[in-house]
Image 1 (cartoon, rainbow, N blue to C red):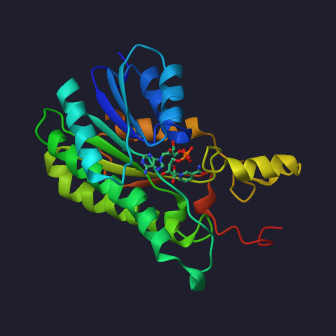
Image 2 (cartoon, rainbow, N blue to C red; image 1 turned 135 degrees about the vertical axis):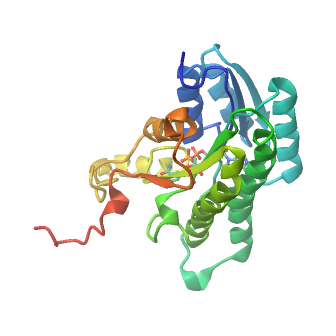
Amino acid sequence: MGRFSNKVAIISGAGSGIGAAIAERLCAEEIAGLVLLDKNAEGLKAVVDGLPTNAKIISKVIDIADEAAVTDAVEATFDTFGRIDVLCNNAGIACSRKLADEQDLSEWQRVMAVNVYGCVALTSQVARIMSQQDGGGAIVNTASVAGLRSGAGGNAYSASKAAVINFTQTAACDLASKHIRVNAVCPGLIETGMTSPFFVIAREKGVEHRLGERCELKRAGQPHEVAAAIAFLASDDASYITGQALAVDGGNSASLNMPGMKV
Ligand SMILES: NC(=O)c1ccc[n+]([C@@H]2O[C@H](COP(=O)([O-])OP(=O)(O)OC[C@H]3O[C@@H](n4cnc5c(N)ncnc54)[C@H](O)[C@@H]3O)[C@@H](O)[C@H]2O)c1
């Protein structure tokens, strides 16, 4: 029996990167039902086509910032499977790196709509179902080290991920009595669709080794390494863990990494 046998999971942002790796990991751990959400139809189809057929898989092309579309997706999941055990709020977008005196509020609104409100809408609707079922459920949000401090993304992106971390804490406290655990992961630099331009440029310049060199493990991470942490938090192995934000960052957030202090 795998850790997710007989369980049903929803993953947002499943058409690429970390979301695709979560889907692969849950299939490898014998998940019974998967609902994969993404706004990118082509990416979603490619991921579904590459997954093993042991799970019943439904894919839905939606914009996670569209509350009505989120409602439809959650209802369709419940109609098909009759339960939802795991929710991975993973869809996210980056933003420009304009300085604090150059901010564009329309960009903030879109980043917040996708990264925060999409997560809140899915959590709220799925938690209503989890709270009515035996065993409750587990929710894992993909935040970021950018939500812990500056230096890993634009201002709006960082603020949105800080909001995800804080919502993880408030939701965990609200939902604990309903047997729903809520946790987050904070990835460092991971090679995915979102970050591929950095990797492409670094490879072109022959400086790929420099990506991730400021973290203690001296390398960038891979999506499957984040998916492994998410699967742990979503599983019963994490049955006494809620309200936490686990950095999956090669030790990056463990150190101020001040140049010259250890030489
Ligand atoms: N790659 C990194 O270094 C890194 C670091 C920290 C956190 N993260 C977070 O990891 C999560 C996954 O990103 P990734 O790195 O795998 O990037 P990615 O671009 O490869 O995947 C993100 C997926 O989310 C989907 N998506 C974006 N907006 C959406 C919307 N409005 N509705 C539905 N789907 C939408 C995209 O189409 C894409 O398939 C994001 O929340 C991101 O902020 C990534």
